[in-house]
Image (cartoon, rainbow over all chains, first blue to last red; front, top):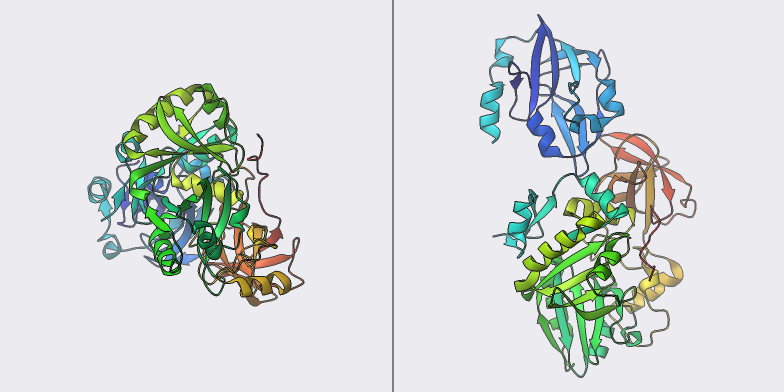
Length: 125
Length: 366
């Protein structure tokens, strides 16, 4: 995991790619806890979400989980590869585990409750 | 306070993720549910199912007593033969689904669901008035190990037990010098055995079976794969697919209702009426046509009208698609091949009614 990512207590992460551009996904810890991932539903490019709004659904063999936006933003790209092959998320050698890329003008207030990766790991373990 | 089986420390040492199931701390998976599932379909897996209940019923009147409790005809059971049946209430609803084994004249073993053992015992005690019968809950004395898969019986034979019981039969036997009961039953749709052993020998037996099974490709299997395996085999899970408001006829279990039994049993009038005229609902198998997984509790629609509810659903690791069991209204035009819709996260998804089981069963070879 990229150590500069910021995480939510609900196991999403956001990583700044360039100014106002971010990648959003779920943490390695979340993937490990879910076990075999068998289904991912991602939003369409162009859709806009508020912070904490559900933007995706991920299903393991056992259950469905909703995924929340760590910050507000507009979807500019979705990872079709994991939609078509959800099991890639469980593959340790696969690196492109991001869900969506967004454009965001989120301010500091939206980032206030996000955790550094190391703090997040401490929180969940 | 959750209960632990005598194999708890073994599961932890094998890296299992433990979950609460019916008041028991049980392994849900050791490695991956899908891998464990495939191990059982292709080789052999070992399950700790010691949470299941074991009840012994004996006495002069045990036969008429049991025959009053279930729609199967228990008088047909010969020694060491087992039968799948349901404990029904007065309305024909299912209190639990059971396997009853005849151990000897006037002595039967009943295997019950962990989540229902208290209800079962209460119901049996309420029904025993006037019968000379003794009911003993032996659950705390016994561990139950299931060894399932196409190589399960080869493994047991390799341990010196050449004469395995036939399908749905039980025998007394010995493995690694341990006395045990071994039956040709399971909950996976594969060939295999279930081994009933006193708690004090369960750890030793577990280790020995895992060790001896290495060359057969044995792996420990958690409750996660147990659930996906039984769903592919379209075997009911109490609490999901069966409850006190569902009769054996409605559950697609008419084959386990005796058509010739003269003795009365709880719920007989309702069940016999439903055998002739059909139930209030019927169980169907579904495969998803659209992307999406049907889960327990999701609603089923036909022509924009709600016609039913999903009781079990998930992926089929062997078929590679998504399957489900649902109760639907018994409409004549809803039959195998019909397309219906499942409401998944506020959107309707197409599914087709298909035959059960979802994968062929392989448990009747001898």
